[in-house]
Structures are given as C-alpha cells and as structure tokens.
Length: 232
Image 1 (cartoon, one colour):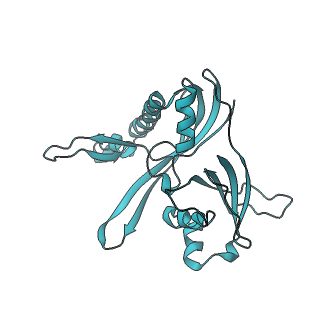
Image 2 (tube, one colour; image 1 turned 90 degrees about the horizontal axis):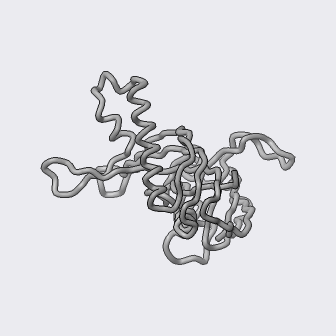
Image 3 (cartoon, one colour; image 1 turned 45 degrees about the vertical axis):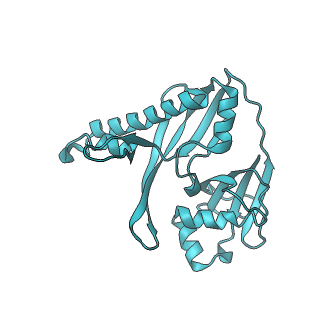
C-alpha cells in the first residue's frame, strides 16, 4: 500500500474540473484522481479524502487550496502542471491492544424494513434518527443529540465487525448531504457524510488492517471510508 498527499494546480484544470474540486463535488474529484493511475485497468485502486491547506508554507502554498490524501495499492503517478504527489509506502505494524488516534469521513447508513415494500430500505443513519422527531422538534438539541448518538452507534457497530473498539465518544462534525444527477435517470444518487475524530483500541489486528486497507462504510468512490490513523 501507498499513502500519498496530492495537491492540484488549479491552473491546469478544465472549467468543469475546477468547479468540481473547489466545490467538493465527489464524482468529478474521483475522476480527476483516477488520472494518477494511467496504467491501471481494474477496480478502483484507491481511497481518498479531500481537505484544504491549513496555512501557507515555505514552498508558497496558500491557505484554502484543495489537498487530497490517498491510500492506494498502486503508486500514483504525478502529472506535471496538474497533480503533484508525495507518496510513501504504507505498511503499519498493528497489534491487538494497541491504541490509535483516528480521523474518518464516512457515509453511515442503516437498512430497515418499510411496511408494504418487499425489500429493505437503506437510509442515512442521522436522517433516520431525525425522522423519529416531529417536524417542529427537528431543530431541537434533543434531535441533534439523537443524530449524534446514531452516528456514534453506527461506528461502534462497525468496530465490532472490523476489529476495533472506540475509546470514548468520538467527536462528530462536518455532516453534509450530497446529491448527484445520473444520466437518463430522473432520480439522483443521494448520500451523506460525517467526520469522526477520536481514539480506538485494536481488538483484532488482521480484521482492522483489512478495514484500513479497504475502507469503512459505503460511497468509497466519493471520498468516504478512508481511516487516517496514528499512534496516540
């Protein structure tokens, strides 16, 4: 595996690519980052997370510009004048009982039965929690607390399946809903994302390593599921 930091030269972008990157539009960004793997022909070879530069540095980079982190099977290939890449091998030694700090941008969903329908329906866990409140109560603190609790419970459940347990309640932030149009179809793809920041303990090193490599949750092609870890 390779962990990479990718910066974009905005001057090298076409108009539609510029709007996609600056607006955080997941599909256009995903298509742009695919260009880092010109000789690869197979399933999506990477996870990614979009951030922004936090401040200027000695190399003249400016605060607020787009910044990407990638975890990939293949080594990404920089594109001069468009995509600058700093990459290093990623093969952390992970042991059961070890404590790690983590950051995760995920698309938490839940399946539930709908009366009168044959198949289960998949919903955003936060909106599912919100729907339990009457419309006039959905701006209340109680509703917000219920949504945050649902997001944390989702992550705790993922930990049971993927070899980790949360240590304390993770910070929840950055909740955002997305809607992508699809050609020849009237109903858009709808999904949401939320940022987690917290601490976990590894309970099964092999399962957790697979989770880190493959990502957590759904919508990985749109910038979700990449867990960034460091030793606490």
